[in-house]
Length: 238
Image 1: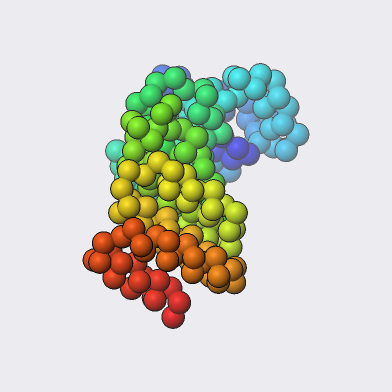
Image 2: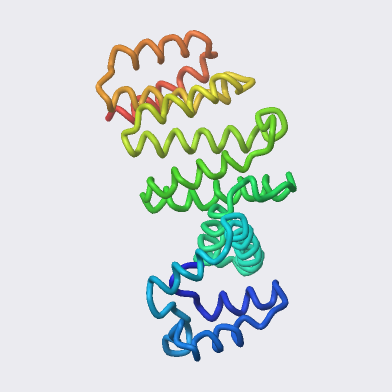
């Protein structure tokens, strides 16, 4: 979980995993390996104690634990609308990694959760964290996701392109936008990606390329969509 764990999380994990974690942590604390901070947290007594405890497990076991803990906390967070616990749970799940899971329904749920917390991070202008969540979300998509998870794929790639743009990462914008251009089934579904790409190119002062991309895309759009695209682009410029 990290160097410190709160009693709230201990109670949640104890319930979902059907073990008395509090008693175990009290025993470890009595031996000097952890400290009790007032009545609300446990903390490893030293960084090296935490490192040693972590390294006693195989990499596979560590990742499985991160996934199990994350899913348990996630269930509680969603039931109670607790954003702080939701971030904690998704961080744990992502440390487990997509290849720990085989259930396609759970993987789809986690991809959607990464989109959700990524959007929350972006709303707080924490674009580095947002992009990391969107990347994890894409990694949890199932095979042939553009076919079976189309809208979620569109949303994650658009969000990743937008976060990359906010970070002035033109290479990232190109990468995620190109995925949308390659797999989106309609021009309307490509609109957001094209807007972000043109915006990114303008920010990078690649004005000639931005103009060519915009003109090429506008030629394929209907009149209503042209007006929408031009309006959004105008707002970006001013």
